[in-house]
Image 1 (cartoon, rainbow, N blue to C red):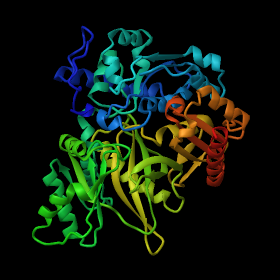
Image 2 (image 1 turned 90 degrees about the vertical axis):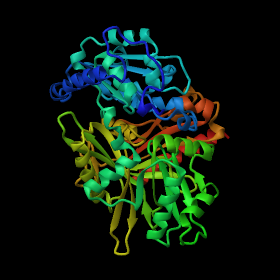
Image 3 (image 1 turned 90 degrees about the horizontal axis):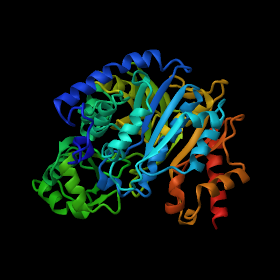
Image 4 (image 1 turned 180 degrees about the vertical axis):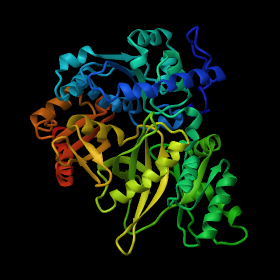
Length: 521
C-alpha cells in the first residue's frame, strides 16, 4: 500500500484523546481543525509582527520503493530549509523536524542569508528536531512512531490558535499528525489526493478545457496498458512512442517509455503489443525493474498517453497557491530542465519561463487551478506542461500532470521571494523585487559528480566565500546552495543562481560548476 492510500500497515502510538488513524472520528477531528485555519490565515498571515508558530515537516511521504532509487534522498528533507527565511518576521517561531540531524554549518548558512535579522535573534526562535532514523520510511511515519518526540513538539507550541503545519506533501500520515498535534495543515485533504494523480489530473484538464495529450487513465493491468497503447496507435498511425505513468510517480521515476517500432496496425495489434511490451518498454528509473514497475502500476493505477513530438518543445510548469479563503494565486512559471534518455527526469528549472509564452502559460494554469479550487484543493501545487512551438511562431500548451506538493520549483522561488521581497506578475511574466528590479534564476537539484564526494559543508562554504560565490544581499544576485548534506557521501547538491538577467543567472551556475570541478580535481 502506498503512503497516500493508508498508513503503511503500521499501528502508531497515539495520544489518549486522539481518534484512531483512518477512522471517521479522525476525519471529523481533522475537518474541525482545518475550519479554524481560515480565520488564522486572515488575521495572522498578513501581519509580519504577529506571534505564530510554524511546524515544518519535510517528509517525502511517497512510495518507498521508488523513492529509494533517488540518490541521497534523505537529504531532500533539507529542501524546505528555505522556510527558515520565515524567521525574518521577528515574532515567528519555527519547529523543523528531520530524519537525521542537519549540520550546524548548514543551518548557520541559511540564517546568514536572513535580511534584517541577526542570526542570533533568529536562532533563539528556531528549534531543530531529529528522529535519528536514516531509514527510507517517511519522516511523518517516524514522528508518529515516537510519542516522546510528538509530546516535545506539542510543548514547543505556546498557542495552537496561531500555529500550523507545513509539509512537502500531504497524505493520511500528515492528517494523523495534524490531529495528534491539534494544529491545522496548509495542504489538501488526503481524501482528495486522486485529483493530483496522473489519472485525476487528466480529468481536471478536460474539465478546464485545456489541451492535453491523447491518452487513457485509470488503468491497472498489463492488458490495460497494451489496449491503451493499441488505441493510441490506431488513432494516430504515425505515433512512434507513448509514455506509461504510475498515478503517484514523481520526478519521472514512475514513468516508462514504449516504442512502437515496426508494429503493424491490424486486428492482432493489442495482442502483439502485449507480447513485446517488456522488450520495447524502458523504465525511466534505470534500476527499477520492469517487474517492480508493473507491480507498482497495478497497485497505484496509472495512465498511458502519447509522447508529444515537436521540433521545438519545452517543458514548463505553473506554480499555484489556493489559500484557506479560496483565493487563487499564480505564483510563478518555470521552464523545467529535464534529462534522461527521453527527457523524463526533472533536473532543474529556469525562472521565469520563456517570455514568448509565459503569460499564455499562466492563463492555462489558472483555468486548471479554478477547477481544482472547486474540488477542494488547498495550498501550493504545480501543473506541468509540454509546450510545442507552431509554424506561425505561437505555442500550444499541453497539460500533462498536477503535483499536489512542494516540488522541485518551490524552494528556489521561495528563497528568491524571501530574500528580495518581490512578487511574480503573471500578467507580465516577470518577477519584480521590492526595489522594482527584475530577477531571474537558474536552479538545479541534481548537481552531481563523483569528484565532489568527501566535500563537507564547511569545505563548500570555504570554497564559496573564497571564490565570491555567496549570495550578495545588496546586489540581490549570486548563488544559494541546498541539499548540502548530500554532498560528502553522494557528491550531490543543489544550486539556485540568481541574476539580473537570464544570462547572468546561467553564468553564475556555470561559474560555480567550474570552480567546484577545479577545487575537486
